[in-house]
Length: 209
Image 1 (cartoon, rainbow, N blue to C red):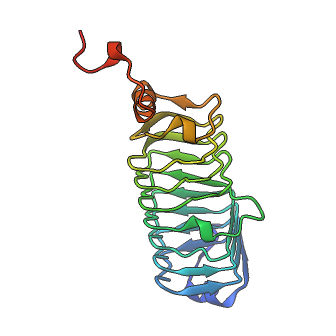
Image 2: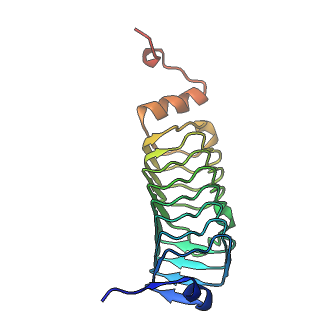
Image 3: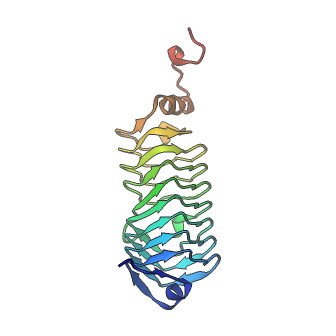
């Protein structure tokens, strides 16, 4: 028998929800404090501009939801997957990373969000629009950016060892200002990175015969 979907009252009145299905929640701009969600699924929920104060999301999946300008104030996210969600302008630096911040995004819009100085080992972004993100000082070892647009995203003092950006577009950063090692780039991305460093390969210049 399928688990019935929980509603806004369930979320407001319960401190802990395990293996719950939360569908169509309308919590835009509201504050949730001290809530714990474990192995829960959120579908078509509106949490835009909501403040999540000291909440915990463990092993959860959020699908087709509006999360733009979400405020993750001291909240923990471990093994959390976002699919077909909008997360514009989220300041992820507000999270509580003590449990380890493990995130995956698929077909999401993440423009103008900040991940500065966070440890995001094995971060996954697949088929995402991720323009103007801040990754300054972040640890992205083993991260994967597959079919993701990173135009205008900022990398400085970023640990990109083992990161795979070979299928990402819009990648450009100064290699001397970041930590690299077995970092994978596409030909286009590699040329852009060399260009930022002032290196030109004449044989590969456009129009060169």
